[in-house]
Length: 344
Ligand code: NAP
Ligand code: F7E
Image (cartoon, rainbow, N blue to C red):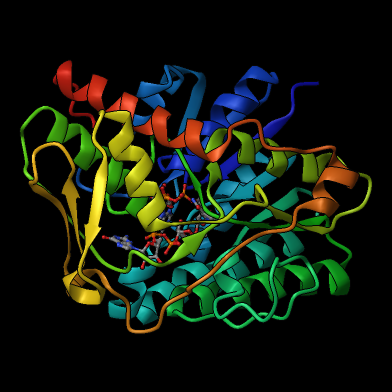
């Protein structure tokens, strides 16, 4: 029988890649979309799968909506990817972020519990829960120390997912995913901001990119690899939680350097802290500046994941390395800009 999957957050980066993955596997995919003045399905169109999924209206703020929808669709698997996912915004909208990223998950879990606990459930947890990392690398046993309202809301829903698994015997998994990026990444996240900025510099549309903390270190992987891990978790006999990461960490400065290399620019760094600049070696022009508006009130300085458990138990491993990821993102942005394909 055809399996049915309900994906919340289908209009986002991961929602698009997961839809593509599940459609290829033969699933009937339902994609929950919240009401906005213009429905943003551009990522699904970009991957050429908009007509292969069924869009259904659902907001994580509204439990009656969730209940009616899950009851009607009777999915075999629910992937909860919907969230206010931008850390910086969570400092300005901590209550909204807590409601959607925290309580919203409990709304879904309660719905499943009331329906006898049938659909398997995937929760999009995050390395932001490690925040001020207590050890390095971080694995499933590393103590949490979130540093933002986003990380705290996600930690609540992570524990809720575990609690519903233990209390109500539900098949609920939490994937602790480290940063994963792609050409479909939102333009406010640092990787895409850099790849898009470099493409604009190459085509002489802008002169420089303003960034925040260049020293922050992240374990960056490719989103297309990470959605497979979500699916693998729900195919096991027993539900569990898994760290998904590449096992390599790089600074924002390194990302910038490689992205510049992709457009044949070598960067020389000058000054320190808030006054640091990145200069094009050939022309002497400043192409990177630090702007304090992009720094955070409390930062997650260093993340490095240990995905040994996922490798051993799920047979999962990443296929794209850091350098290829950076090149892929800049190349896509260059092509889109040359083609005047402003889908983002
Ligand atoms: P994203 O691109 O920002 O997508 C978020 C999705 O959530 C969008 O489809 C958005 O809809 C939807 N959404 C937001 N508020 C909603 C609400 N109230 N009701 C229903 N839908 C709502 O995020 P992503 O990068 O794909 O990440 C997917 C999930 O993984 C998120 O939960 C994120 O927190 C988590 N995560 C991401 C990473 C990463 O590195 N990407 C790492 C760990 C965990 P609109 O299109 O209408 O805005
Ligand atoms: O920041 C620094 C910034 O916004 C990465 C989300 O998907 O991954 C993502 O959260 C780092 C931070 O992602 C700029 O301070 C410097 O240290 O790209 P980001 P994030 O905060 O790591 C986790 C795993 C999630 O779960 C989240 O949903 O880069 N940084 N300069 C900057 N960041 C931004 N956005 N913009 C800058 O100009």
